Image (cartoon, rainbow, N blue to C red; front, side):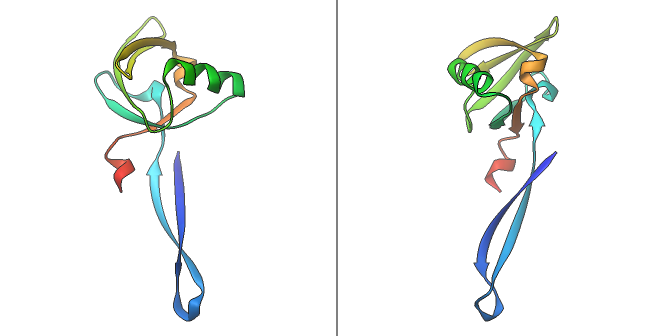
Length: 102
């Protein structure tokens, strides 16, 4: 899954043209143990987004995958370890921190 960001720059004759940067998004459920990722967006209903926000899963925050156990993903977010289901982790779209700096 990838998302393209476009920014307008004046082109020849004053016409705007789009510059695109591609960033690969990966669900948190696909990150490996020990990896650090940055949250890019959260998919789902408002209640789901609010629930995850209250646990500390907010856009631009970094998350470390601690382990996977019995269908749950244990992550460290904002200094706290939290266990969420793989299905819930699949709603959190992430990037590697280096990709967000491009």
